[in-house]
Image 1 (cartoon, chains in turn orange, red):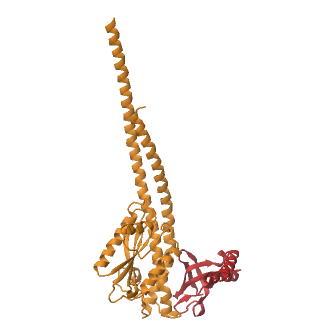
Image 2 (cartoon, rainbow over the protein chains, first blue to last red; image 1 turned 180 degrees about the horizontal axis):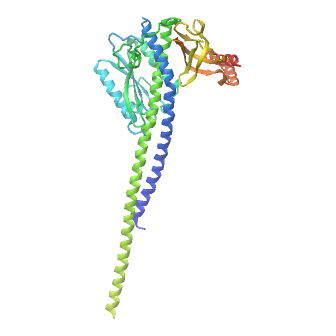
Image 3 (tube, chains in turn purple, red; image 1 turned 90 degrees about the horizontal axis):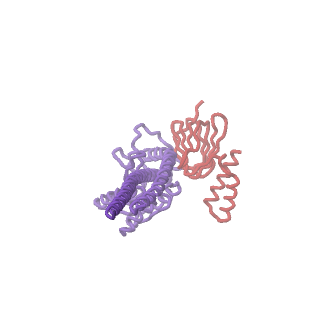
Length: 307
Length: 124
């Protein structure tokens, strides 16, 4: 066998092995999207009910709460960025990071200091490499977040919103995550979580203003303040939980797509390598034949000469 | 007969929904019983069992750990970070958890285990 064919054969073998791996990852990701989507759906009744309750308290009482009142002159903001723990998901993490960078830029332009909070190893590595300060980070649950994870993320964020801005607290809380639109489309989005926007023109708290009908007049147990105190942190937790779940679904979808195109690429590569290997084999055979024919005719000529 | 539509929802799933004649829950300021046409109320729940008397005459007990109830227009939603139906509770495991939390002096875990046991006892 010619040296050329051997090289091609070896490359075909290695690409085939890679293709098997990417195909397996594609199938795993595809099955996890469905699971992640189911989790998003399962968490929505809680989020919906909670949103209803928050709207009811916020509109039904004149209570002022640090989590709902806008600071007169916001100077500090926190940005929570949700990325993945693992790579091989195409542009998933870097798109989210870019969205966070744009938001940070915008907030800085408005004269606000920005604290970065990061979920996922990829985002953390990006910030670490550029030596940017990260207020706090969490890793290890990006592909299947639980409510306890969301709670762990939310607790310090809520604490820092409640704290005075002079003592390291923040006035606003934003979250950047990848929204799961469909199997094919996931878009990085930024949302303002706090302060809650309850007026009609707010885009960040759009969900809160979608109910035009009259609200019932609630009786609060133990008091409107007490209810709001307990309700708002839960609301933030549930929004973060929902964002984490959507990000997980998006991550799997992005990985599935990346692995699908890797598998397709491997197939193309194998096809063209097989063509090349065939051509090389044919060239070898042709060469051998011409060598034999050449040798035979040389022999015949020599014999004819000696007679 | 008037009835209440009840939804019991935990953070990650829907626990129970159905029609009820009365619901008894424990808020921070004490037990509250809700029957049809109760005034709209929004309350913070204490960890504890929530008892639902269904219109068919049965009783559903749910262990709720921290949450809210909101009632309006004969619709009651009970939201909890963690909630379990009494029949889902593994009594032996809850007892073990209670033992452990007592020995480790973990008040929160002890309370959780107690609530589970109380709910399980109420259902059987």
